[in-house]
Image (tube, rainbow, N blue to C red; front, side, top):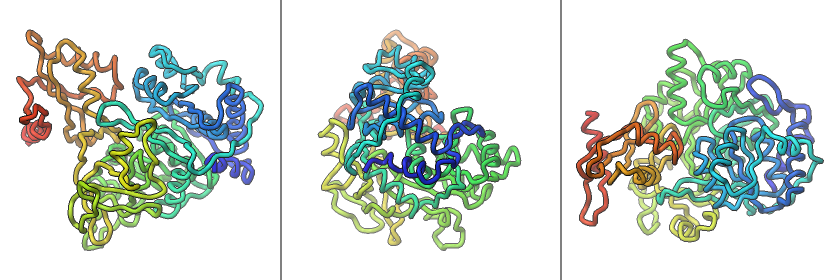
Length: 506
């Protein structure tokens, strides 16, 4: 079925319930939310957009984001969410690869797409075309099958180019139902606060809140500001939000410095990167038992495993600390195992690759059969994460088999940064690694071998990166090296570079 039906049903059942907010200002009730989505759907149909067509969303966190998203779904089209922090060129590449017919963008991002010559019609949400879409005659909700695409989510790959994860209606439905069973219960009195990007997991979590007729709030700042979050939590009283571990650490530090208690924060679901045990212990001590951990990937969105609020807050179990260092147990719609190189299941307690199978696992990558074949084996998703499972089913992640860096809950792939740096005349060779950081989880560090006659100029490299890739991906530090450590095959030994950083820190 079309996942958009959940909004239609809620609007019929509870039309006057408050739905969309910008800060504390109500923008729409559920009848208005539904009407806005129907208008966008009718306008899309008039532009020749039909079932299965892709429509990109390159927008900041604003209430219209959800109206556009459901308008796309009502039309039977596929939403292509693009991280608003990406460079215009990066967003334009995603638009081209997805074959999107249109791209909705908030004003500054619309300009970035225009400058990047994005190969699709750009709809500036501050312009006349979007005003016409919002005023259009309402469309109907297109019929879609459970295995039809709903979201085409781009996640970075080891080659440096993003891969389009095909996310179906069935995947989203099961993810949301798992949430109700395994993660948290939602009621109409709850408020979903979107301080993390709507293009990612925080945005997917709108589904169960729409289903139950809850409120949806975008901060006026458009992002994560601890003081603003505390104020909104007090105002709305029953606030749910998704947060990366670095956000929780910032909230905890802000509360400690200001004396805030976090009143009104009912549930914070965290994931997207490693959470240090000491940090979550301090967070629970500060705010109480409001935290739930989930583990997922774009290829199995938000739905691999869960550590419940009771388990996160437990200090009585004999192994509470080990469990708190895990990513929990399998969610209801999936099976999880630890596999060897061939995918065969390993005994409990033995380290191997975390693998998952079930109705929340993707059918494959968009127009990329080679990557699909490598990642999906007999229906099992090979996550690329290394860990083990104990006798009680708790999965502990030990490492990532890929070189991905997670900084502030956002994935950064080194090769993409390296390719950008290598186009500068100053750079002869470069290797990018992640360095542990108390605030961000990891920060990007570039080891640079300068071209003959050149000297390292970090400011010039910073400017060069900013012209090609998103600001958050650029290195926080550049280290000049005479050469890079390599094996007999000429492959750079990044483990040696990480050891250098560890020794320096020690």
